[in-house]
Image (cartoon, rainbow, N blue to C red; front, top):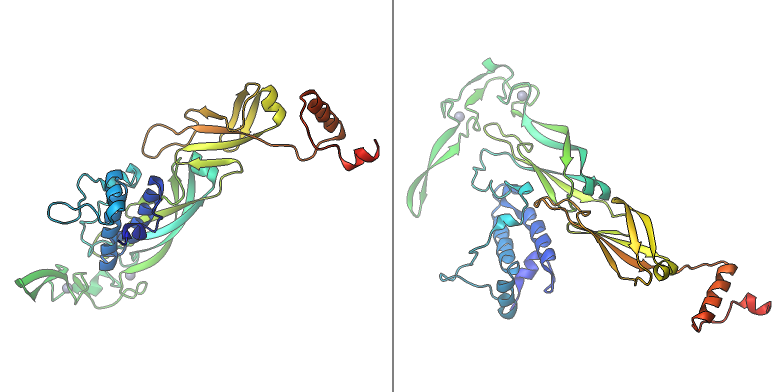
Length: 363
Ligand SMILES: [Zn+2]
Ligand SMILES: [Zn+2]
């Protein structure tokens, strides 16, 4: 058995649900057909990725798959995706990602991609970022006609300005008629007698643009935002979309993000845990929180601050903040402290290594 579903998603056999979901999202984005203008190989790969995810994301199907190495089939022997909702992967934020598949690719321009870096704090609070990106747009000078002036374009003699011509093809099913872009005017409906000097008759120009976008609070590393219609424009139809891939910087020391929750490791002095404390702690990104520990609190104790985590992009509820209590032993202590520790050790009858070399010499 090959267990190739794991290979398709490039994950280990023991991967947990979050890892599977992340791997799926990454792979699905990589080979989504909308981003490859109908590339057959990518389309086939995309199907395999969905297949793999449909099985591995369902505990029951995965167990069976792990046992047999073959996916659960429906009655017709085909792939069983019943009851599987792909849309649950992409938060409402990403809506439309799967909605484009049915659209005619001939009329739609290509998608564009760009990357934006945000700091960890910005990913939690949300921010505005100015992005730069390139796209192909209809030429400003000729408005996409490709002609220097409107009188330099005449109606195309082959398609009579209808942009498309019908083409007959012989197939095994008989003669089929298909609409195809007019080869004479390349779908413009006009024949150019004098080409536009800006785009040299292409009707399109490549531009660099800047745009300020809202990055929503709670965005995570590896997520992508779609800005509809900011991809490449075509002469005859609608524009593709712009995808902004988000890269989040490292979290401040001691702080970690776990989905919508935050975890902070709070180092305490042994005396603080022994005697108990109530103090205000400044937690990076989050802000100040009052920490109240009873005498004898053990390392590993976790304090929960409900709703102090990260905003969820799909749910209304925020995650929580968990403060995990750790002990930090002082590496250097003063002579006075040392004496106090030693008398404490004597009182508590704790055996310890005898004093430093110096104290021995001067004894
Ligand atoms: Zn032009
Ligand atoms: Zn034509």
